[in-house]
Image (cartoon, rainbow, N blue to C red; front, top):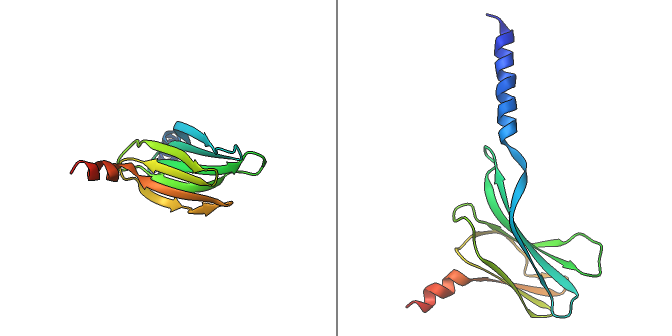
Length: 134
């Protein structure tokens, strides 16, 4: 048995598999909210990952100072794989309190409650809708 056709077949198969995988996600949406005093910006980005063993839909929320060149700090990561797109709202209740509200019960993979003196609260809007329908 000639091993050359078999190795060629394996190489072609690997190339096809790699061409269908996307290491870089596709961004489905983004938003920003500036604090009332203008010192902070909260930003959210929803990314779609695809490929074998790599598929996912995630929304990351980050916080950064407007006066700093430092990278933003991730404060929230929502896994939406099971429910698809969600509605996300970011509201500054005060210059030092950010509220992030969402719908459809995504799984919270990561959550920070305070960063750089900013209190961060998370609110599930779909639970409020369910409560008011009684």
